[in-house]
Amino acid sequence: MGSKQQTADFIVDQLSPVGQITAKKMFGEFGLYCDDIFFGLICDDRLFVKPTEAGRQFIGQPTDGIPYPNARPHFLLDDKIDNGPWLCDAIRATIQELASLKKPKRKK
Image (tube, rainbow, N blue to C red; front, side, top):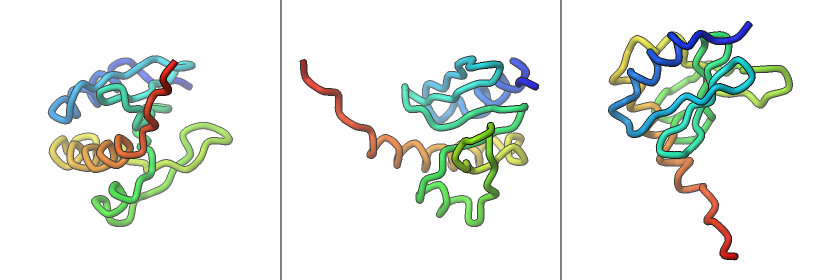
């Protein structure tokens, strides 16, 4: 089906207090990045966030969803996109954990 640019723009705007948020078009959907850290997807106009322990602790009991066939489960947060402050806090928790897992670049 594909996601609308309008949906991606709205989510990016909601998350702007978190950092440099970008939505990159990928196969009719969008990949979400914060300061070059990939943290989620917008698929079929629904927000999916990479599952992390910090995100799970913040959310409580997240709803899992599959963004596309054969994908790993992600946290489905599309019912929270209108709650900007809550969504920002959830994404901050997720990004902090993902940043700590980021592999250092190899020296050439």
